[in-house]
Image 1 (cartoon, rainbow, N blue to C red):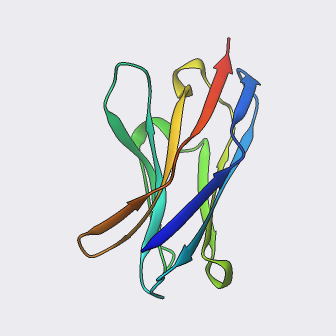
Image 2 (cartoon, rainbow, N blue to C red):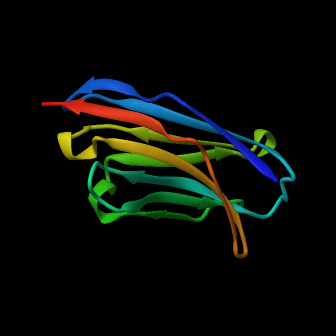
Length: 115
């Protein structure tokens, strides 16, 4: 089992910034992928960004150039720096840890961007 604890969500004005953090613990393998998904009210849960233990990143087109994902391998912690936030970024953000077909989800943290 892998446990994920997220922090850093909140309310911010459009154009502002937030930084999300997610710390993983438990049965962690050194080779894995961590990342973030988000789900807005009434919509499906979508990929935001992922990063492998080797540092390879993937971003959704909607956040490219505004969000940056990074990780601290020694602490199994992943970060999401969100800049130039827009109202459409409002959602619950979920951290994930995955290896092969196993995916673990965090409890989610609310990000609200006011226009």
